[in-house]
Length: 86
Image (cartoon, rainbow, N blue to C red; front, side):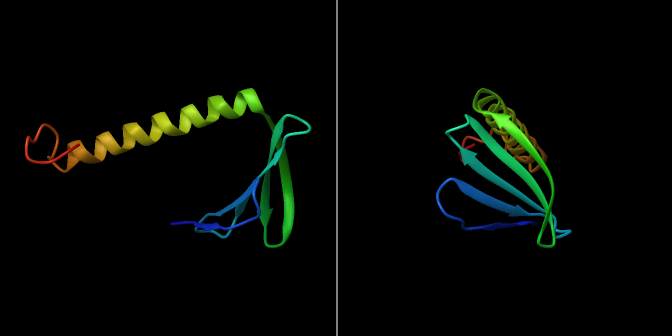
């Protein structure tokens, strides 16, 4: 599992098991979220995600997490059980 590092407000860093980092930084003055890929201490790529597209990405991630959670519940045999909340 990757790590999440605490950064100042408006910035987050996620590190995957390979040690590759994804840093997200809000630039409200430009109307973007700057997504950057880090290897070691070097930024190797950036992507400017418009605020409107950021909302769409959040929906995509939330929908995917909901589907993954539902799949895990179904696999564990807990779906439909009156005794356990879903």
